[in-house]
Image 1 (cartoon, helix red, strand yellow):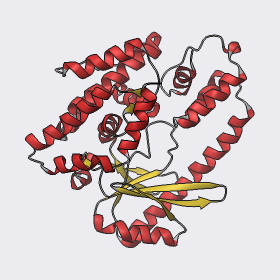
Image 2: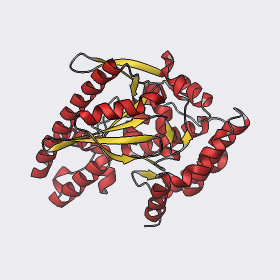
Image 3: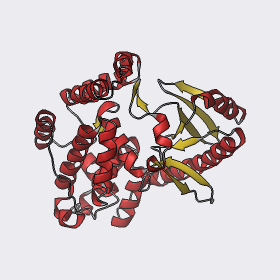
Image 4: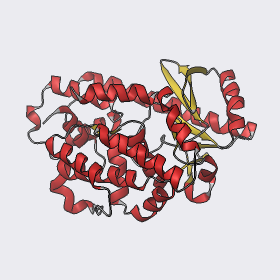
Length: 349
């Protein structure tokens, strides 16, 4: 068993993994597994999974556990600060990507502004609290604050987009069906993108932004399939011309889940089945996954091109959204090109 398969099985929050003879696992293998788990944002889940299986991790795992607990604490403090500032300045914010239905500590806190006019006032107010601008992206700005021997990043978005290409219209995300309130541990109430919208966003990000199915993205898809919320998720995806992207994402999730956890499939109630779907991208994914399963799963380059074509064609022909064409033409200036070049390099190694 390779490192990526081992970590994905142990870290998963839904199934009891069958690893084999645990006594055969070397310290070097576990150290490589820790590095892989950190890189793929599942260290906390991996640590918990090893504890359940009574796998004794090297000492650096305990040090990392403390680092992640501290990061979580400073992130929650930053979230409370954001809520206080939003009340003070009368700014409407929504969290997305940051919270998942399983244990997850993100690299940064992602928020979406309802009104673009609030962008500069929020940044200026955060700078007074010790934050500085770390980087400027296409539709967002990332601010950082150093906290003791940790740090916290806040990613402020004016639009929910991949590069220049909008996925959803911001104003629609403030309708009740698109968001939900939740309570923090300290009792404060915040607003976040609904779980069903998060699935559609994850599907779109995986194909149009990241060009791969991440391990947290795999777990998120498993959660959606197991909870049988697909009918509503399909409606959301169809509304935003992302239905084919959703189906391909869920198909990939279902295939990988069956391959990794097939002995438990009867318990999962994984009901997703291919419907009236375009043939070529599914055949490419199917062929690639049958040949080699490597996680995170990198989609074939032709599938990425197909994903962009489907989204932009639907926006222009069905929605008369000509702006989508200009947004697509601007993509070469976004960081997605760097990701794509890195993807191509990794794809052939």
